[in-house]
Figure 1 (tube, rainbow, N blue to C red):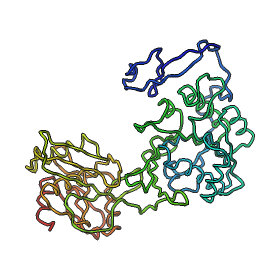
Figure 2: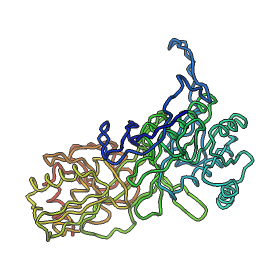
Figure 3: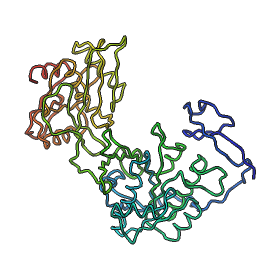
Figure 4: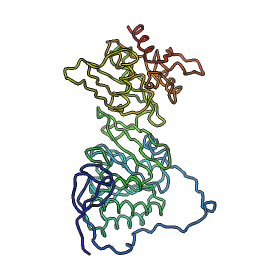
Length: 453
C-alpha cells in the first residue's frame, strides 16, 4: 500500500496537498497539520467492531429508560447531568497537569464502590506509575483494572474480555490504529480510533471516558469532528488563582449543558466544593470599583464580584480591557452609562473583570458591572454587603432576569443587607434584606451616590 503526504485542517478536517496559512474551508489560520494517508484505499475496510442495525419503525423501537449510575463524585455527576448512562461517551479535555487523570482515577474508585467494574487504560504511563498515583490518592479496589497499551486492537480485545461497566482512555492522542499509516496523535489516527471506540462502547453498553489534550489556544487537539462524535464534552480548566478546578459541560445529549463542577486541588487529590461555594470574600468593607452579584452556571448559583478600575489615560486612545465579560456587551454598557448618566469616559482607561478568573455571559451581572464602573469613576465606595441584580438594556433601562428569586434567596442566605433589583420585579414572599428597586442607570447612580458613605 502506497502512502502520500497531505495537510489536514485541525478545525474542519479538510485535506490539502500543499501547506497554506489559511484553511479555505473554515477560514482559520495556521490549522493545517501534516499527515500521511494511504494513496489507494480498499473499497470497504472492515471495522474492528461492527455496529449496525436494520431499519425499524419508531413505534416498534424499544424505549429503554435511561438509568443513571453515580460516579461517587458529586461535582462530576452534576456536570454529567446526574450520573453516567450505559453507552455514554464522554470527552474530557484540559491542559496538561490540570488533574484529568486524577479525576478519572477518583471516578473509577467511586464507581467501584457502587459495584461497577472499571478499566483504566493509560497510553502515557506504566501500570506501576498509575498504581503509585492511586496509592497517593488512597484509591484501592478489586473492581479497578489497569492496562498500559496504545494499540487499539489489543485495547478492544481486553475490553471485550473484562467487560467493564466503565472504561477510561488516557489519552486519545496516544492510541493508534494499526491499519492507519500515520503516527499516533495525527488527525486520521484520532478520528479513526475514536470512531472504533464509539462503536465498541455503544455495542457493549459501556460508559466510556476519553481524555484529550488542548492546544495553546484552548481548543481540543485534533479535528472538531471529535466533539460531534461523542455524547458529552467536558472541559477541565483552572481559575486565576490556581487553587480551584472548574469542570464545564459544553455538550450533553443526556442532560443540561453549561453545568459547572468545582473542585479544590489538595495533597490527597481533588475535593468537591460544596454547593455553598462562592468567589466572594467574607469582608464587608466599602470598596470603590467593586460590586457583588449572583450568576448562574447551569443550575448552580455562584456568588461573585465584578471589579472595575477607571483611570486617567495617558494614551491618545483610551484602553478598554475586560476579563471574563463579553467585550461587545461591556462596550455597550459603558456607552449606555455615558449617554444616560452624563458621565464621560473619553479620557479614561477602563479595566474590568470577574474576580477569580471566571467567565460569564449571564445578563444578570449587567447592573453590577455598571455599578462597579460608576463607583470607580466617581470614587464612590460600595459596601461589601450590597449586591446588584438585573439586566441593562441598550437604552439604560434595568429589566428582570431569569431565576431572580433564587438569586435573592442566595444573597439573603449569605447575610447581604441591600440588594438592587429591577423595579418591575414582584417578590411573592417577604424578604429579610432591603430590596432597592431601580428602573434605569440614572436612578442607580443617584441612589449609590446618596446612600453609599
